[in-house]
Length: 180
Image 1 (cartoon, rainbow, N blue to C red):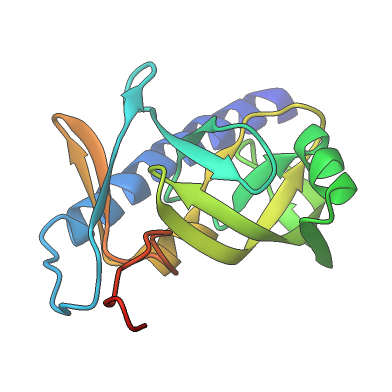
Image 2 (image 1 turned 180 degrees about the vertical axis):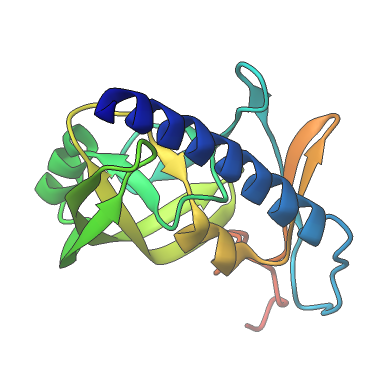
């Protein structure tokens, strides 16, 4: 009985997550950029399986990786192997430990770190991003801890892309003139 209940709860949780994802996407799909100072960066997304999209993300000091875009995830995630490399290079700072509810409904203690720099789309930089660390070499997730900072954002299903309304900086240098 417990096993059947767990299966039903897990199935219901996946359906709710899908509905939440759809409602968030629909809710932001008609947002326009109002400020001239905001930049718009559009990231191509790769579709893997039904309605699962991945963006290319670079974390300071590591190679570019595919991150699953998940608006139902409160935090962007890295895995322990990436954390080890970032610690070695002095690119992360421990913040706190939280109790997280995982996709299957279980609870797990998860460490939260601040990563010095994450880059989306090759030039949309974010500094001091809070990330949750998942065990081993698990999948990395682009969650709301970073997406909120890029808001307003627009998800496009065809062609798959994610348009970001702002970055901390774009890494581009602007020539101000010969005397500057």
